[in-house]
Structure formats: structure tokens, C-alpha cells
Image 1: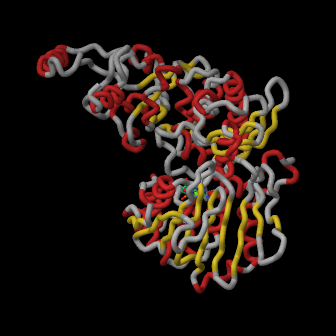
Image 2: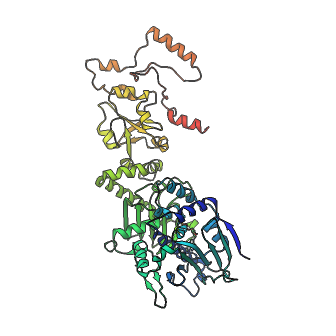
Image 3: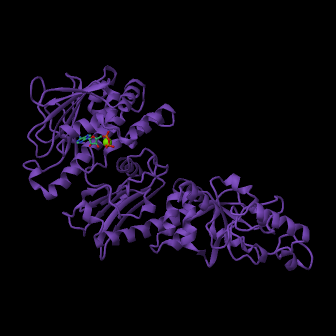
Length: 559
Ligand code: ADP
Ligand code: MG
């Protein structure tokens, strides 16, 4: 096949334009991104070689090599990993819209994003154009005969052709070689001390060796090389943990919590997990089941393993490495393996334990965590996996009685004499809810109501029923147990009598009959109410009927 020129997908062109032309002090992250891709490529080859050992052939030692060439003013980053065939090359490096492309362009445009975050959006490769005005990719997929040559100046199009034919250089025997023709003002990346420093800063944790090859000298290994999670905690610095997090999570923030553990016993596994400090842009992407990478005996298996952690912990990032799962397990089978289920239970407990500890130690940080991920964690409340009690303790709520967040335990501590239930009201907006007429009777009696504003709040109260024997009760239900609660500042003897449903006098009875007739078919009943102190009317749901907000939601979705 001859050479072919193709256009970048439109968003990619926009991105390249921004990335290549702006001035960034943080352009050194290009190397982190290329090394990260090279490391992923080695992981993927190692996995493929479990079932097809011949792929490793005579070159079983996987490594990454960085080679500056001062005369040509090029910097080469090479790996002997999985490589790419022609289709993959075209799709991955230019034509297929990657979900993060538009999001990254937007974040940069709104000045909300920094260019260092490029890897987070799944478009790290393009960071090469921050330092190069021409990029060449020479690649040969493991097991393939033909190698391919990709060239672009980042201005709208790229060319793909057979490597080794015509003017083209040869592709590596296996894997990918990326040649950066450095811009005149980026020649610092030809200096060994600069490269050493950048690799040490961002890529020290990379599990395969990252080597510097200078002229005729012997290659020098720049990183610690070796899976970070296998090292003793005492030998790992915070910076190393953080860079590892950036690599596995494709994130640029500082993680809020870290769990590094090793379990030995009936099942053996280790893990290095993080709770992000900021909400990832694709947290609610329904396609992704989990972002925790599964390894078996240091070999990467998959980064999308359903069932490794429950979906209500899908904000977790990091790795779990099992000693007991069979290495040759397929990605499809692994989720049903009993060992995986045991790991999930144990890891879930650890994470919940850590969250409990963090809630104690770092209340403020916990609130930020809750704002980022509370809506996800609450999904666990209706997933009967034995963690419901613990999750209820971790849950935080907005309420009519406090400014910030409250726990259920604190709510229960503030309950009024005679109050048996935890009262809730559901809607989209906490401020609007606070002004709801349905709350008037509660306010008059000083009874606190929790404001439920996440979509998931429509579902869990039906499954959970109670916290510490106190049932959850929506205020929009007809028989709200408000009557049994003593009014806060009411003086006098006959409180009980007052609290009864008021008797309708003859005039009121006529009005009620009129309203019932007029609204026939639209409402089930019209009743005189105790609950309102200021407003004339409010809608309530009958005991056993759907909660009002839920009924409205379902109607919107034509259910
Ligand atoms: P991400 O790494 O988040 O997927 P990138 O923009 O860094 O996004 O890379 C895009 C894709 O290009 C990768 O997912 C991978 O499929 C492919 N790729 C990039 N570099 C290499 C490489 N060295 N070897 C094999 N494939 C690569
Ligand atoms: Mg990448």
C-alpha cells in the first residue's frame, strides 16, 4: 500500500492548534505522556503473550529507550511493546474522536484546565507537538510482518505509509519508535541532565526500565523500574505515590486518600488505591465499570474489570494485584471467578474503613470528598452487599437545621421528643426545597428535614427503610407523623388536642366539597391540613403511593 494523507478529526485539529501554539512552562509533560504510552504498550504485550508466547520471541525483555540526537535535533522515545497495525495507527493517532478531545479543548478554552492535564483526557500523545514541529511514528505490531510510518507536522493532516519503503526509515522489529523533531527553542530536551530529571520526576514508578541512550555510550537506566506497589511503604515517597497516581488514573490532581496494602492468608493480593481529590470528567460515564487496574502476579490484565470493586466505588483509581487468579484467565471470565469476588469484598471493606477513618481525621476533606463522590457512594445503599449500615454512617446530607452537611447520627441526636422518623424531602435544588410549603408544619414544630437533591435519592430510601431503627419518611406523604411530635414553643395544657386533625366547620366542609368536585380526577382527595402554617395549599402523596418528586420524574420519562 502506498502513502496516504489523511485529515485529523476536527476536534483533534483544534486541540493541536492550541497545544502547538500556546506558551506553556510545563511542556516537559510531553515526555511523561510518551513514556506512559510506551509503558501501556509493554503491559499490553505482556498480557497478549500469556496466550501467545511467541509474540515475545527473541526479545522478551520489555524496555523503553530515550535517545537524543544532537546533530539531527531529534529526540526518540522507543518501546518494544505491542505496537500498532495500520488501522490502529490511523484510529488512535488522529481520526477517531476520543471522548476526552472535546472536553480538553473546552477546559483549555475556559481556562479551567491546564495543559499538564492533557493525559487525563486520553489525548496525551498530542503533547508531543508542544515541543516538536514534526513527529514521526514508526511502529510494528507484535506478530506482524509489515511496519508503518506515520508523519505529521500537526497542521490538519498526517501521512501513513509502509515503513522501510521509499524514503521511509525502518520500523522497529516490534513496538513503536516516536521521533520528535524538536522546535528550535526546545533543544533543552537533547540534554541528558534535563531528560534524567524529567524522567525521575514523572516516570520513576514505571515498572519497565526507562533507559537513556546517548551516542556510543552504554544505556543508563533512569527510573527505579519495578512495580511500585511491591516496594515497602517506607521506601516510597509521597511524590512517587503521586506520580504513580497520575499515571494509573490519567489524572493531574492530588489524590485525597491512599490505600497501599498487602493481604496474606487464604487469598493473597496487594493493592494501591487512591481516592481522587477532584471529580474526574467522566465519572458518570456509564460505559466504564471500574477504573481500577487488575494485575495478576505483576502482569497487567485489564483496566475495565467489572466486579473488581463495586460500582458505587467507581471513583477509585489504582491497581489490585492478585497472586491467586490464574494468569491465563480471560478478561470475560475473570469477573465471575470466586477469587475476584473475595477480593472485591475485602477491598470494599478496606476502602469503607479508610473512608470512616478519614471522616474522623479530616472532616473538611471528607466534605469535599462527599461533594465529589457522595452521589456515587449512595448508589451502594440499595446494593444489598452487607455494607449498607456502614454506608449510612458515611452518608452526609443537607438539612433544614444546619448550614453545611450533617450525618444521620447527628440528625438523630437532634430529633424532637415523640419524633420516630427521619424526615426527608426530595427535589432538585436545596434552596428551593427549603421554601417548600410542605415543610411549613415541620418548621413550625422545629422538626428537621433532610433535603435530598441527587437523582439517586429517589431510589435508596425505599430499599433502606431505616437508620438505627428510625424509618425514613418523605414529608410529601399523607400521614406524616408530625402530629405525634410536640410543638416546640407551644405553651398550655391541651397540646394533644391541638395536634389532632382539625374538624372541618360547615363553611370549610362546603369549600372542601367544592374543591374535590372541581379537581376530580386530578387529585385523589382534598383534606384539611395541620401542616400548613403560611401557605394555603400543598400537594402530598398518600401513604403507599409514590413519592411526589419520584412520580414527577417518572412522568417526565413517560414511565
Ligand atoms: P491514552 O494513552 O489516554 O489512550 P494517548 O493520546 O496518550 O491516549 O494515546 C492514544 C492511543 O494511541 C493509545 O491509547 C494507544 O492505543 C496508542 N498508542 C500511543 N502510543 C503508543 C505506543 N507507544 N505503542 C502502542 N500504542 C500506542
Ligand atoms: Mg497516553
